[in-house]
Length: 237
Image 1 (cartoon, rainbow, N blue to C red):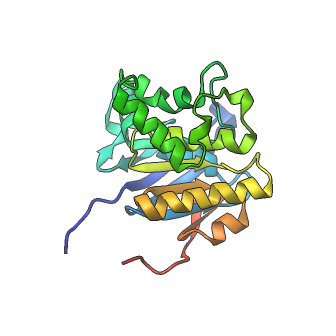
Image 2: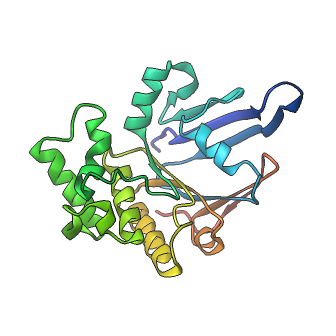
């Protein structure tokens, strides 16, 4: 049997916020492993440390102790410039707010991660951007500015942008938090399609109990500790 490297391995993650006597530990030695192709929901009450953990896993913040490896790359052992390049190459991000730049078209917003590393202007890159907009169901909106798109369409552009670098791991922080129930369900179905058809590994922080219930696996965080790890579906062959 072929042995594969997990997409994500976090060991002993500890994070303290604040300084001096006001400092408090919000994550207490968290361990997480996510295999390729998993669709994982991270749930827990407000203040449990979910977003703090996601920032550490995505290399957007540094732990006070512990390590994070993405596809075998140890994020804690590189300088900031190298870390930025690893984030761009290995990780896609989708946030509650879409963060599209208003003066650029949908296609240009999708291509921005490629622009960040000197690409995004070739015919092949533009074709990839259009392909991704088609996959999220809005190819015909490629030339539209964000203000000409609905909230659900803007979030679809954000999803396409997160995929343009073909990331090993897609991280999403409350991606349906600003959407109505119909658009929230549409975004869920889109993520499920990406997971099923492309084998995209996905970790979503969510308060949406329906989303969590339909994921492959639920990680429960409470007071900065993982207190539950439940697999919801049989392993796919």
